[in-house]
Length: 123
Image (cartoon, rainbow, N blue to C red; front, top):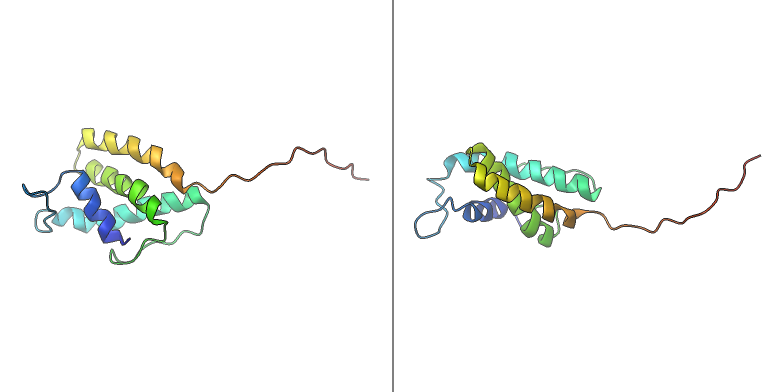
């Protein structure tokens, strides 16, 4: 999934669309301008949670270095949250911030087993 696809899905979820439900790049010029920054902010956060090397996009047409499930379920509401914040759309911001916090756990690294052992005495 590309950064542009995540941005478009976020715009649809925010209902920043035409009356027919389509995204209109003419109406969303400001969102498209801020889109790369929003996608990279969310991408960096999800990569930090996952404990992987952080890579940012230089163009919205690039593929996200995330699992598609994480991209759809976590990155989309995260980008929507940032776009709503930029519009001072408090209701949408709160809704997507809550959803993002719930879904960002999908990016968490798997838990390993911790052995309960007594360390061997040194010396």
